[in-house]
Image (cartoon, rainbow, N blue to C red; front, side):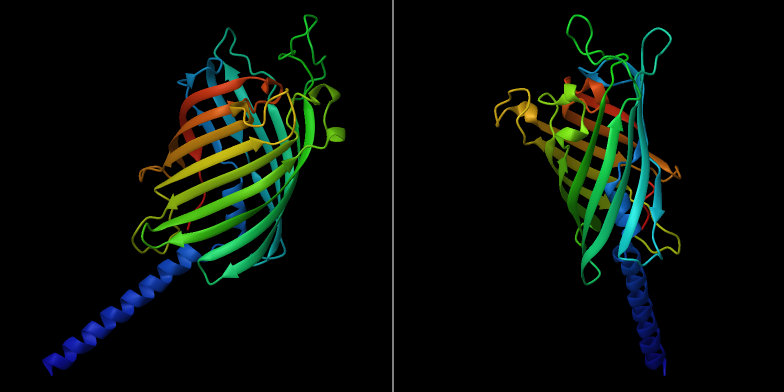
Length: 299
């Protein structure tokens, strides 16, 4: 009789373990299209005034990037995302000026193209975006240099690409690979940008989200994530050779979310390449920066 009770107890414990594993799988694998889109959007962040490198001294750089989802229902395979992205730099100078913010409103359409079990999903997307600095002054100063203070900067572009997500049970991590082509038609950009601003770019990114172990009825945030991004400019501009390193933008970002914080964590980023801050595009940056980031992704 004691042996039978022990057998029943073991069976119940085994069944509970299976259910827990299934619950964990449902949290880890069943990623709706909205979360896949969120992985493709830049997270909102604020940097500390401790940048290391050749960027102008800043009090902070802030990326404000809210997203508004358009879909019929949660399990829809087709979805739109409206984003009113703004990047702001406050300079560590007298009066702490905020100069020529980058305004990047955009709309992106996502389609869940392939589902291979619960672990692997492929999504294709198309984006149309506008990038400007809200200024209307002359592009050049009288001495022929670019007018960084009030010069007009504006371009429009489309981006077409794919996202592939998969799960590594060995690392207990979600992996995301992105590849896309960004096109700035010459008729969509200022005449002053033609020949000096790249209009054809190839983006690639790999991100790994470390999932916390353990079972919980509440959604779980990644303990940390690692993102490697590259951007290769393919067209002819600035008379650069095809293998010139100035054609390559690359960044590596490490993000850590401590247990005692709810919605923000800390990040460190290494970046090499063109300055992405609108009319400052002719500057080449090599920087290390630190800051806080909101990564609302939950599993």
